[in-house]
Length: 523
Image (cartoon, rainbow, N blue to C red):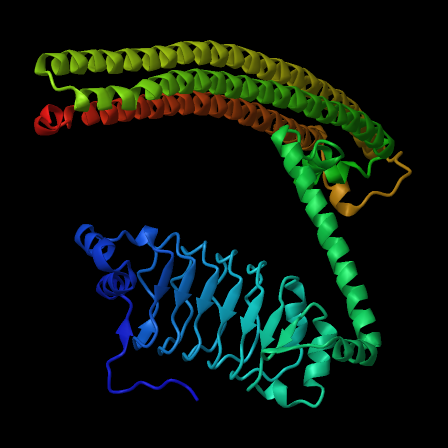
């Protein structure tokens, strides 16, 4: 049975509906009255029930950023949407609606329990992001293909599955198939699967399961390899030397070099080109290996800096806590002494003394903070000098190696031009023994044509080398600038937070003193 539009007008979720639901489901009695007076922030709500509301469309939930449980059953919802901000959601009930497709769940990475019971779903898919899924209820839908079960094998934590009321549940092999292909399942259609059933299912589908596992292992191996390549590439990018551990840069010089590829057919050029490539790759490998070593040095410098900052802050905080603890020891005693004092003159003296203690504590805490600021500023400035020196040295040495690449290219250009001119002379004299492709012979019309062709190839190669060098230098400098700027900004924010904390604490204890009522004091 599907939910139908009834006499109540279909509703779209809006702010008024949500405020009403939050108010009704919030704290009761005195706490509830206070909450209703002050208002309950949507971001503080962790559980929300919106069942039987005739909701047609999900909307306006973006402020419920800490919601963990959402109940939307028994509505007329047609599409799963509007949930992308609920990243902390653990439990979601969309049962008894009119949903036809599973979608809109890609950000719900913490979801453990999902109910889509009694909808119009025909295919199980689009659940890939739900890596923590443990309970899935899909009973009373329109799922007819048993291959949907194979899709669920990826959810390693899935323990409970409900599919009764679907066409596939009518299959004679329904239970055995599911138990065989989902061996970690504990409950099927709300009934515990016994060990005997699991053994029978495994035996019945042994051959197919083995084949499937083999395919899954191959796929997983490919995924692992790809992941390892991506991890390695990110490491190389962090060192600014990606794709320099092979022939990539050299090959890229010839990708768009039409003339250079034609000239490779000339006698003697193949051998010349191979020698050029071998030497070029060696320089690229030197840049690559040097870049990785320098990245390790930069990382060590940054790690050491972060550790120094952490230790300095912790030591300073401990000193602050110690001074606060000593103050707190006297705090209650001083307040009680004021309350118990009967002589007005003595009361005023004690209040003045206690006020002086508060001022002294404030000065001590602020002095500690200023000392920390000076200490961290010195540490940050030293780190800035060190990291900038490392970056400058790295760039200088890379530019030196890139200059060697240009020297190789210039030498190759000279040799190629020499071979091309000799070939032209042989062609004009009719002394060339080798057969050349027609498009290559078309270059040898006259000296200007062949010189221009060799020059165009040379220009492309130099441009590729220059661009790669510029990219490396720009990215390295940008990284360094961004890092240093972020460190300075973080320290400014830390200092502001600390000063605010000190002021708030001092204001709190000062208010306690100020709020001593004269009547209580005199009594």
